[in-house]
Image (cartoon, rainbow, N blue to C red):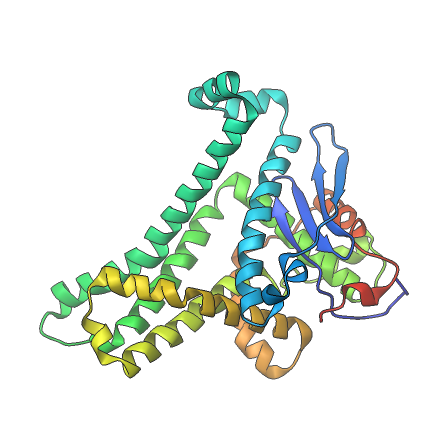
Length: 326
């Protein structure tokens, strides 16, 4: 890349266990700090679903496809990074008796199935915490605190606010654990490394260290944008169809799940737009997500920055136009 050539890239990434995964024109690269201190980097040729199937590249639809795709690939790389970065002794200590029995008797395929089951349970738990709990909380508040006051038309707004509060508190809570703090440091290194590249600077530890750890195309910002958009959608639905305010709560949750793909799609389009522009409107709308990144990113140490640099170098070409946002 030519020196000091600034440009907006479509390169994205994900923090892993003692590592970083980057997505770029050459494919997906995962760099992990190994137990012996060396950095292991592997590049995988990868073609996004939206490039394989034209329908999945259509605005709004591409957001849903991209979200599902990033969840699946992200989980895969997260598991691989954990295996690479841990010593045999640490893996042995981390495995439960059930894990050991399954591994010894049923092999790696069954362990993969167990991993998928764990992912399903994780999604179910997220549904319980971020979808059902806010609805239940507002209903209980309405029934036992306000009693005779009808606030049904404000339910979507109150649910959305409560969902944001739960989300922020959850992120604050998990950020206090030692292992998650390390992941958030790698998250910060991912952003800083991409910023360094986008500013046309040489990818050195010194240059990356000076960059901001808050990036407008961050997945955290995407989640926050989705929460805000969902508030507007839910409130609009109740205003247009007043009877929705009094439907069965389970039915109401199913209705919100039905519009979730649209919310995802709009959230994706906004994040894509934010990554391409740097005007006042984008800054104002991106601000809540940037604030959340103060929780989900931490300042990385130099050894963590080195991992980010290796991962990014593996996916870029000599031509900046190969990775520009389209």
